[in-house]
Each structure stands twice: as C-alpha cells, then as structure tokens.
Amino acid sequence: MREPANRAGATDQRGQRPYGVLRKRSEFLAVRRGTRVRGAFVLVEAAKRSDSDAPRLGLTVSRRNGNAVKRNRIKRRLREAVRLFGAGDMAVGNDYVIVSTPKALNAPFQDLCSDVSSALARANEKLLRRQDGAKEDRKAHDGK
Image 1 (cartoon, helix red, strand yellow):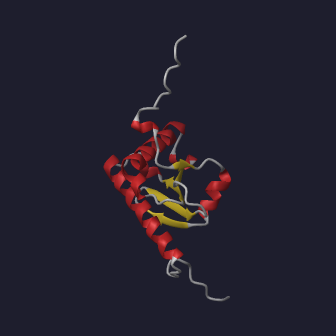
Image 2 (cartoon, rainbow, N blue to C red):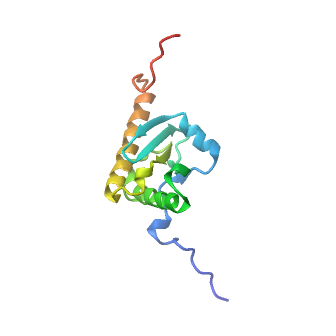
Image 3 (tube, rainbow, N blue to C red):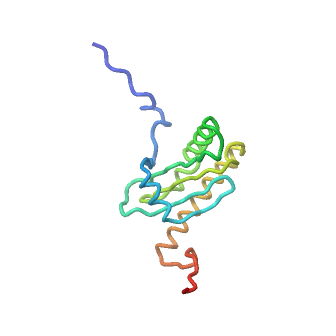
C-alpha cells in the first residue's frame, strides 16, 4: 500500500502561521471593545486576552468594498501583507481585527504592507499604555 500524500502546505512556509485566526462573531465583537488605530488603508482593532497564547487575527472586508471578487482580492492582499510584514508586530495574548477600506484594493502593495505593519505596532503601543492606566486613550467624560 502507498503512503498518503503530504498535505498541501505542510512543508511550505506559507502553510504555517505564527498567529491564530478569529472565526466566531463573538470573538470579533470582543475585539471591538478594545482600542482602534486608523491607517491610510486599514483600521486595526486590538484587544488584550486573559491568556498568553499566540496572537489571533481576523479580517473584515464589508460589502461596501465591492463585489465578492474584489473583497476576496483585498483579503488575499491583507493576509500576505500580514505574513510578510505584520506578523512580527503582533504581541502574544492579543487579538487583532483588520478592517479594510475600499482603497486597499488599488493601493501599492508596499504601501499597504507598511500601513498594516505600522497600524499593528501603534495598536500594541496603545494597549500597553492602557494597561499602565493612561487615560489619554479614553474619551473624556463631562459628568452629564
């Protein structure tokens, strides 16, 4: 009898992610309660989890970005940008959601990569400041 073939991507570096994936709606909604950082092509939402497992990532590309073909292309571009440049900017124990804008489809790929990377890094900084008790990240409350 022959051995079964290896799974596609099992030995390929692209098949291994240094981060987990958000799949449930409740996980996406939990990240919305965290901090937000706006970039030129994306909005990054980040939240700290109670455990110290690998970071998790979710992508949101709404219907206002175009038809299914355009939305899938945006998702592929964002995944590749995170794989190449953004995975190192994600901290352990955090969840991230990248929300795309319609500009992400036609943006030069290098600009998209740098935008994703810098937005993830700024989100981490905001989460660390919040953890230390800084109040400048929170909205002012006038007491009314």
